[in-house]
Image (tube, rainbow over all chains, first blue to last red; front, side, top):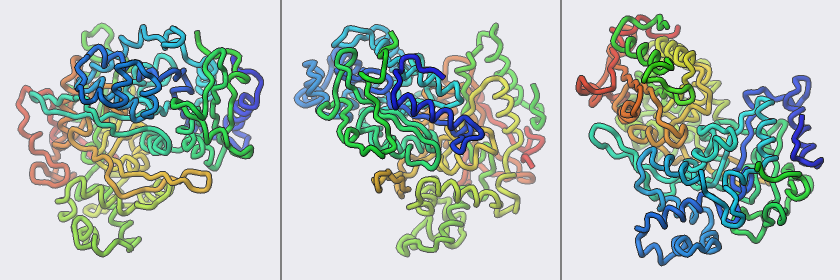
Length: 303
Length: 303
């Protein structure tokens, strides 16, 4: 069992021990393959989220390209920030603000249009800080972990605060997680009855903000059972991690702490993106494990 | 390719032709296995829904057993009907009424409690008209169809107007559809922060009524792509069938007409359960096919 990009650490040991335990039929912690479900946050857990979420880079780009934003909206945040490229102003509006930008940027698109547009955009989109392709800022250690879990008959899901539709376009190729196992925030969809054929049109309402406790409700609605492993990086993931690790059999919960200012970014309690505050104060006996990116990972990105 | 319980009919021919076409790499209608997605309504499409939905039989049973219903609620429908066993009165309140009964019957239950309770109930629950076990009133021809599609690398989903949580308990064993591919109506879930561990508690609000155009939005949110085959039996399924068959490649849409008063039930435009009115008036060139249960099926139930 190998995780080549993981240094010897408490987190790696816990992962190996957990997998051994749930897959060994003679172990008291054995779990049937059908119940081996693992859930992953995405932004900051599977790919980089600094200086701002990829979904928001897309939204800014498309809003500028369209150029038809209601002038009244431009008086307020996050829209003024999108016009000015002021990431901090946008991020102060929190996940709902990021989703409002996305909703506005994609409102009125028909079925299929969004997928084609995001796919085209994502093929060349780059990180504003490093200039690297967004598709290369995926965490190599997490890809190895996904592979290792799947080798041991785990089913892996993404539970993201970004739009589920957005991630279902970018995610499957990056992580090998199929679209139907990607669950995110939701923007309203309206179905109009066109000429005998219903027409799906994207609205502007945030119908589900998939963050905090809402991630637990989403898991129940989409998966229908409690996962045995969960991975996240922010306070918004913590309820999900606590719920998963509170189950009555083998459990694993890992919280990634972004500590690597040289190879990635270093941020926690003062960041409006991926804030980690409560998660830094977990008691030592807390079942959720904290991973230190600078210390525990030998390599950060896939390329 | 065989469907032993299907008589030679336009529907059977269409199914065979469709499967041949999408699986033959030399055919212009060829579809990659990953895109072979089929969606099925459940009540009246996979199992019998008369004289009332199984979900509602469960709700009535549990409401009576609990006996603690707010007396004010008992002044109104569907609650008075549940107390009196007046199925017609309940069904006149439509799918939202059926869901309100279910929400009330299960409100306050914790995570896991509902599953255990429904499982116990379903093991012995019977149909009020025939006395047969509900679990035996599953359509044999549809089980054969599910198998045939899976043999040809289709992924099959259930898109039901009943509670998704309810069907995720009863459905997997009956149909071989895994829980995460069962999508239904949703009752609100509240997550309370208990003693370090979040606690999921069932609420009373109908947060999603998965009927009519809403089924299309659910497909987009859960599957993330347009299916190529859809099966239903009521006007509430028609938008989904029309949307699926409006796609730009091989498509199949089948509407089951309940015509068999001897072996099952005969109902359509005047029924408050599974009403089929608009679906009876489809033009002959309409891409959705109608199946006549009495004429087209040699055998109705699995046992």
